[in-house]
Image (cartoon, rainbow, N blue to C red; front, side, top):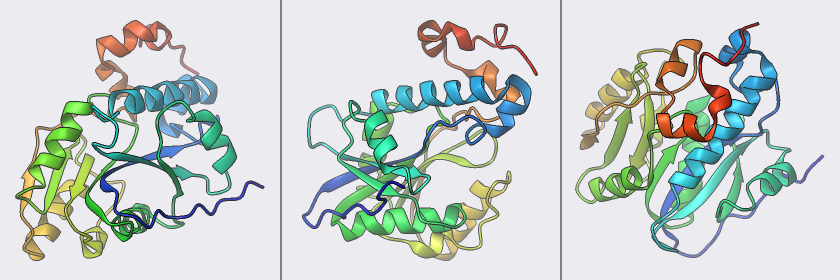
Length: 231
């Protein structure tokens, strides 16, 4: 079993971009898509999407922001670091056990404990997020407490914070179409200033395949919706 405890940096690190990522094992990723296209193609699509997001969210210059990979499963440190070794990851942090709220609290808490100035969190489901979106998020946090990119399915694809806000992730109905609404309501209760960007698409269900960007499909024509076989 791989060692899964990685030390948290103890020096001020500026802005941090947390990317939540899973090891692309068939049957463990993109399970809703796997029911339509099969577990192996679904895992291959997940790998391609993750690498696409990582490539497009690199900082414009070294040190503009740090990149942490918040990975799962926790025992996969060696496999994750091997996979992501060419993607400019500054720190590998295992995801905490628990629901998404617990994992977000733990990851953002670790980043602010490492003296981050501002923290942004993304996954690998939204292929529209790029360097410019990350830059705009950190800029929005200059005069807002939270920055959010909503997802079309009622959740969000990016979340930015200028300080640690653990209560923001409590009492949220995760994995429903009420995530964004509940989060905004919670932010209002906490009197936090929110900047909301235009919504983007997550690629999570079979119907979402129509939203794969043309540039992604040009690089990965094997994922054209009409080429993916159904099971």
